[in-house]
Amino acid sequence: AINEDVIIDANNFSYNKISNILNANGNVKIDNKDENYLIYANDATYLKNEELFLTKGDSKAINEGITIDADNFEYNKIANVINANGAVKVKDTLNDYLIIADDATYYKNIEKVVTKGNTDAFIGPRYIINSKNVTYLHNEKALKSKNKTKIKDKNSNRVYFTEKFNYLINQEIIRGEEVLIITNFNLPKSDKFFLENAIINLKDNKFIAKDTNIEFHKNTFDVENNDPRIE
Image (cartoon, rainbow, N blue to C red; front, side, top):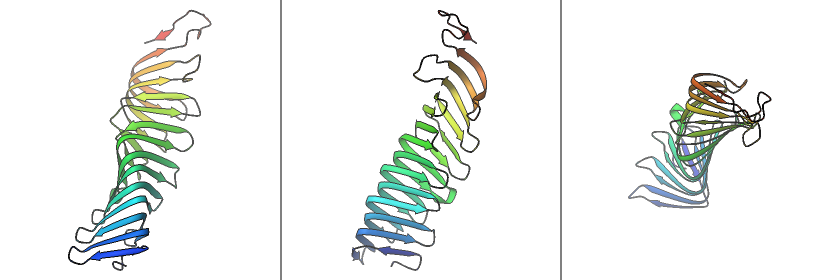
């Protein structure tokens, strides 16, 4: 035990009194009762002077519906921030969201997750999002990025490509720039919608957009060699 708020269990401990650093290894469990955190790992180092926890190997953090799995953690107890790196999975167990990245930082006090690098998000059983440097706002239920993004709707087989996006998860609404919508993705009779700026309602496949260009599949109007467009 460190104090009344933080309890560490492990197979083995070593403590450097001069540097005020505790090393724990083997089935490490860190119970932060003050912040309602549970952290598990193979090994952990507690830098008491900095109130910093460093974990290595099979690291897992559990906090009020948010579960984070990764190779390693750096948990700043004062700032209440966890940085996770290596095979990171951030799961919202209450709402069925999963975010996968190589690096992610969870800001507990403001309920925000920020990823670095390529990021995949799975929103329930329906939507798959491939992007980069994504921000997830847990309280607002919003996912956004300023990078090129692909969003696949598995139910309708529509794919949305956008330069940047803001996805309101509960409303199933995307706000995007330079949007390309492809229906019947990778199948015959596929139509394309080019939208400069758009608000898209994924529930009913409707959108409001500026500067729209539409390319229908060739026999849309029962003309075999037709190449119909609307601008």
